[in-house]
Image 1 (cartoon, one colour):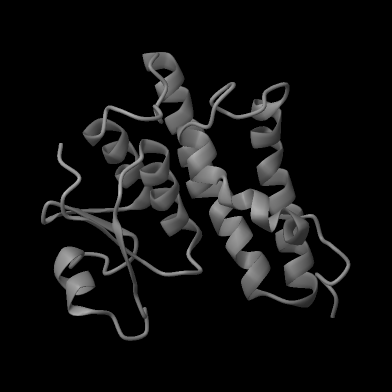
Image 2: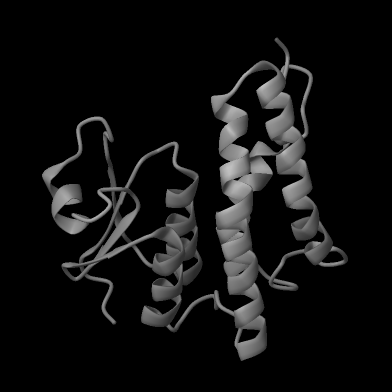
Length: 177
């Protein structure tokens, strides 16, 4: 597929938008980035994602794709060259999707609470998030990346967590009243 007309509608602080950018960069795809003001959503965002009205949205040759994990899979399928993102083996693909769904459904809500609560509720949110992350840590044990020797789908999906680990670990400035 041609790279002509690749655009990402995103928001600079969104951890899910970075997934799309990482996938495009791994594939060597040039794209236009449009930073959205989510308090004043653009006509493009509302047109390209009228259902959830959220970022990220990938627009490829005028066709919009929403939801970051779906976009990452689309990028891997649409641009066969460059770095492979999804595992080639069907079982490994299923495992990567399982862990991605686990992270999305279980870990992300727990992590969100860390940033939206204070005091005892925040301390509990840190504890829950740490427990949620333990199975992911066990799945990574002995490997450099979830994808083995190279970055893959699951690394892209949960990679933003690494940036926030000092916060999640309950660093000295966090979880204080």
